[in-house]
Image (cartoon, rainbow, N blue to C red; front, side, top):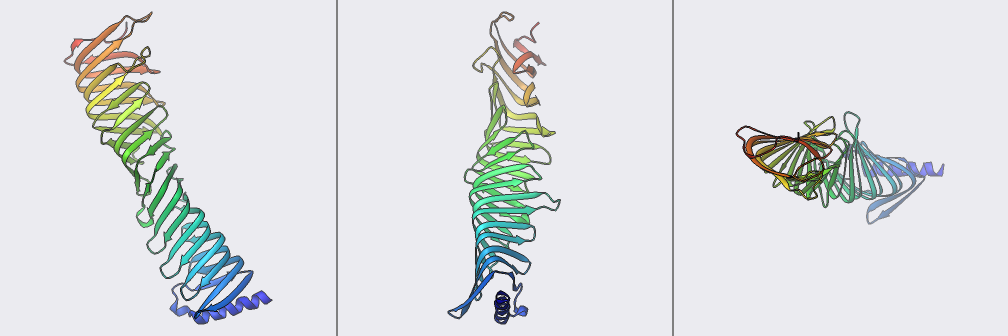
Length: 358
């Protein structure tokens, strides 16, 4: 009974200080085990302790303890803080809520869940988050983790900015993004931006994309999730145990969540090795190149226009030593388990060459 009387008295005092007609979203107390109200310098300061539950308009708060500065309209919450605001649920050890500016500052073990229209979720973890309700802006710092269920995407960074209304955000300070639906593609760069809720991803400077058997470096990357397409610009380079390649532009295509094709344009060069070689002694240059993949491994390599090739075959029990240097308009190399099965040059062929092993 005593707690009910104190709670009722508090509500009377609060209603007197803040008439509902002057409040856009009046504070409404649902529960507190203990309520202490003090008047400090012409301001009522309320301490709510134990199983605290209250509303500001449609925003719902739960916490172990809360201190409300009624004139300043600032609330400090401590211990197991939960905030529910439309499609966002926010959890933290401590939260500071500024009612006038509608800004929340969350500290310690912050976890945020956003629900999409299709009921899939996006989550964020960090040690510090600032959430501006009116602007729908979200800023996370220190050991940030992000997960998007719809895109099956995981990310981490030191700083994340997210503009909810625009579906735009960016990751900075050692950002890493893992696209589980794309052959477990891991992307790192100095800055990673996402648009339309991760449907388009842009990476800038020192970009590195890693897959199971190879990786690609570049200065700039554009990734389109719906098309399953990645474009690399700015001195892109491909590295694998079997081959290295570079060109002015790379285009990587995915199908059924696996890499299907890699297309290179302008000043293309690939250096590769045979099974018998340790170093990548063979090379091809051309205007265009295509790599066809199966189960993550290159099976067919094609070069077109202004093709120039050098191929050295080491002597083995089944093969004779040979060196082929040829030019033409199209080169087709068939590969199995990182071993060259055949090499075919077509159209205006010059030089010494060997089509394939007899």
